[in-house]
Amino acid sequence: MKKRVVSVLLATVTIMGLLAGCGSSNSGDGETKKAESTVDESTEEGKVINIYSWNDEFRNRLEAIYPEVESTSSDGTVTTLKDGTEIHWIINPNQDGVYQQKLDEALLNQANAAADDKIDIFLSETDYVYKYTDADADVAMPLEDLGISPDTDLADQYEFTKQTASDQNGVQRGSTWQCCPGLLVYRRDIAKDVFGTDDPTQIGEKVKDWDTLKATAEELKAKGYYTFASYADTFRLYGNSIDEPWVTSGETVIKVNQNIMDWVEDSKEWLDAGYFNKTVKGQWNDDWNKAMGSESKVFAFLLPAWGIDFTLSPNWDGETGAWAVTNPPQEYNWGGSYIHACTGTDNPKYVKDIILALTADKDNLIKISKDYLDFTNTMSGMREAAKDPEFSSEFLGGQNPYEYFAPVAENIKIAPLSAYDQGCVELIQNSFSDYFQGNVDYDKAKANFETAIGERYPDITEIQWP
Image (cartoon, rainbow, N blue to C red):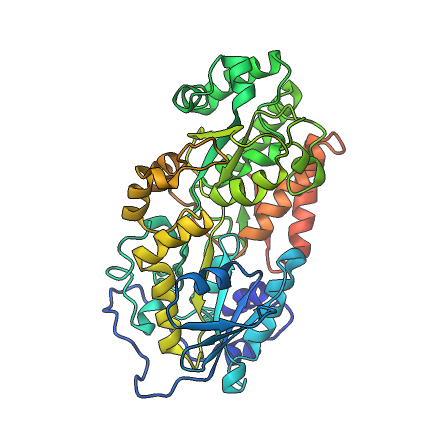
């Protein structure tokens, strides 16, 4: 089992190298334990807290709410706390796997690193969080070992975020300030032109499930509009609802879920029917960004809070208030940044304090929502925000999106995770994108996926199709 974990976590190193780099082991037998810290309170904390991340999002939020912050250097690389302790921010880009590569190399050296060079905190994303919470890898400490009780300290968090941050034994090894429920975000002007109204309740009825949305797509097409920009826009909804992991723990077989193949079938049908814009091939490219502009004929996007504020808003070149939100055809989650205490940290008390401040303090989380527009990980807080006019959005024409985000968040059932999720999700979309575009046939797309998986994950022995 450990050999398989190594091939995913640190593909270029030996098993013994990984085990040496991970420090003490905690297999997590799944039994209920009290949150009694294994940290020696008399041990002096280190003078440097090393935090690995891929951007300054976490730093900005920590600076906004953590009372121990004194100042930050002009280049953003060092934050000094009131007692003189320094937080060193080690930032590497997510693109092309650079962040994970640099983090994995540092994890390999963790046990032998000097105290002030040890990783204390690192972040992961939902797409690859399980790679780091895996009990056999043991690179992320169980929160209970820090003295944090998931049942009491984190009782107000959305359950699916706690599940996402847990290992295969149910032991929680990370925590997040974010919850990322997704909505359907639509153009008001197009809604009025086609349906005679832009009212979110009435539009919600027209997109309430896939069958209804398909009929609505025909109405949009008849008026010269696309329902969504790309087949990639709907993938998260199908992928979030699979009922078994891509790879079951302890196995080396990828099982492609029927929901994924339903996405392939439906995407081809919708693309051929003209419900997607055929010129938009995937996401995060220039054509997709332009589809969010005022000259676009795209009616809607499926986005979480961060997608509206950091993707849609910057790409919109029309008047403020042109967009609104309503319920999606099914509940889904997209994204989330998880905070992990690294095994071997020499700053466990500070690490505990930071995790609690960022993910367990309701007032802090509400402030983050107000300052940064994050939908934060506190059920009671987000219920309150849903009824609070202070959370209305100028970009959405004064609409309060939390009114729609909150109920979606409470109904999300996250798909079971595996250490192979990121690669499977990326490669299945890449392989069938060629099929959608007519470059290869269906069987060739399947064969290309199998080839790509073999190159990314040499330890996988079989791919089972539904």
